[in-house]
Length: 442
Image (tube, rainbow, N blue to C red; front, side):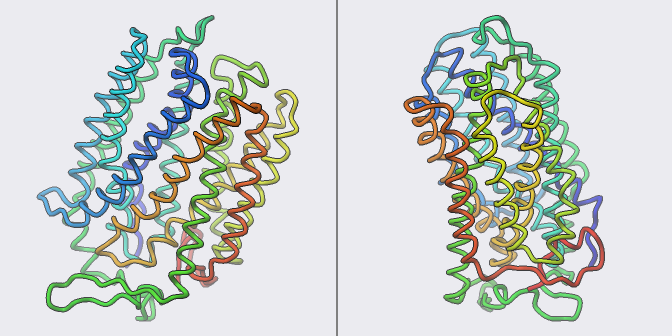
């Protein structure tokens, strides 16, 4: 069974919608809290961490619930449709309240409801890709999904550049035009997904295909071979060897550490450029846009490298590139165009990590628990994003804004060390096409 590229792109619309939202959330909500409501960095970090605290419980829960769901429109689709609809309404309400009111308690209450609504469908939306993709093709499909997500983030950055015009006082910035463009974008992408992807029909096709076998009739991975199926009820009993569990533990530790570094930079950079470099009017978006575009352009070349040297070394190389750029940025006394170059390399490094890490986690499970393993991956990434806004925010406020990039260097270095300890889930070099360089054939 070959990968259906058109279908995979359409499935990626769910991830595109999600990423467009989080690009806005990570960069603009901290500015609203800081400049409109006058909160310090530590309190802003605490509020920004609410999403990740909720995610620790909600992503595994709703991932597992979607594994068990059986409806006329599919397992994951009900969560995606309902979550997007509710999130769009709450998102616009949130920004309207920020525009017309100085009631911080009301803003936080609506923000909390918004984060809960997003949490109900993030794992189901991400799990839709492996659910509708033969196992042998899931890694290359993940490359396409990441491309779609990055394009969603780029859309938001472009809209910030075009529609977000700061007033003389940052607190008076009008977010309404930007928010309308974002809500419409989220609704349209998910509507197209629902119309174009008949989930139940496609699940049946994948399950009747050869998703658990490679081209020569063997099981795809040793990890999958360790899972026992209970013949009486068809349920799956997951049995991983000690070595595989050890690799999984180090991989999840690495996920925590590199998200700790990267999220600190992406969350605080919009304020860093204002406080350290005295840049205004959404100027930070240029660097972040360069990083995301560089990531988009690098996915396929990264696939070529992965095929030759393996997933583990590709991830380690990506971490090393990011460490060097974070270190160089920490010495920048004022903004320079060279900063765009650093962020381009950061984008390449992040793509090397992002394309390869999620499939490594998912491939250690079985098809019937994809939502659960997706939730497990996001539990560790979100745990990092609970910790890092608070800790890095404390350092920014009470030590110096210039701690931002050294902070990223430290945690990226730690992730490099733990990733060295991962011994399973790497790739073999035999591939048939450029996109197949993303595949896992253990």
